[in-house]
Every structure is written in structure tokens, then in C-alpha cells.
Length: 212
Image (cartoon, rainbow, N blue to C red; front, side, top):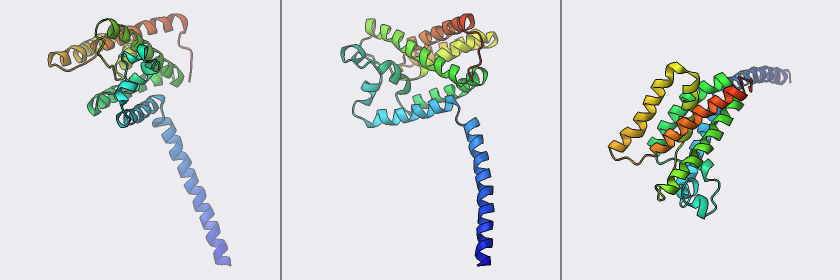
């Protein structure tokens, strides 16, 4: 009986130690891994898995003529989370991970989420105007428009990186066209413009309020 009680006491102490270690680990995860940027990346990965596993997933979730004629009004949002392949997805998520976390640390989670979704959807809508009037056969997928918007946002506030950001967007927009890759170059430039204007408006009307 005494042996049992000792065993229970040892187990309780050990459980408390494990619980404390687990709490510390969860605190680390919540601070380091559960940033809004990383959650958006995870959602994008899940969305891509759904996209490739449902019938006509790219047409349903991409941005195309069905936005108007089919009443697929979710497309300006879902197209941000859809991609044209693993390489497309991987490159976009790597850039988002780099710059999204940078903005999030400076502005906070809520402000970053608003920035990413608002500018992403607006970029999709403006890109659809190009699709509708210039190239009606296009099905637009990818987060690059929204990512270029957050780069435009950075370019406004960080003058030292501005030329580098613009040059990089020019390269990723023009170089693939030269080798015949189908790329929505217009979404990149629209995103850059939208993010830059968004930053101007934010600085004028919502100056650095802490949204953390």
C-alpha cells in the first residue's frame, strides 16, 4: 500500500513537471509558429489540397469568367489561396513567410491580416477587370498579387528597399514571359500599386495605432 502511494506521488510530481514542460512548449509554439502569417500559410496549403482533390477545383476556386456569369462571388478571395502547382505554391509561401512575418512584427496580427486580405481581394477585383476586357479565357490563381501588395506596402514605408522591391517584381513579372510561362504579370503590378496606396492611406488616416 505504501509502495502504491509513493508511486502515485511520484507520478503526480512527474505529471506536474511534464505539464509545466508542455505549457512552456505551447507558449513557445504560440509565439513562434502560430503567427498570423504562418496560419495563413497553413490555410493556403489546406486550400491547395482541397483544390486539387475536388472536381474542377481550379475553376471553382480560381478567378475567371464564372465570377460574373456563374455567380461564383467567392473567387476574389479563394483565388488568393489557390495555386498552379507545388513550385508556384512553394515560392509564394516562402516570400509570404519572409515579408508577412516582418510586417506582422512591426504592425501586429490584426493589422497584417486586414492588410493581406483587403489588398489581396482588391487586387483580385482589379485583375478581373483586365481578364474581362483583355483576356477572357484566363483562370487566375495564386497569392502573388496579395504578396506584391504587401511588398508595395513595405516599399512605401522603407525607402531603402523600394528600388529593390520594384526591381524584383519586374523580374518575376517579365522574365517568365520571356521563356513562355503563363504568368499574371498584371496582378503583380496591380498588387504593388494597391499596397503602396494602402500604405499612403494608412499613414494618413490610421497612423501606427497598436493593433496587437
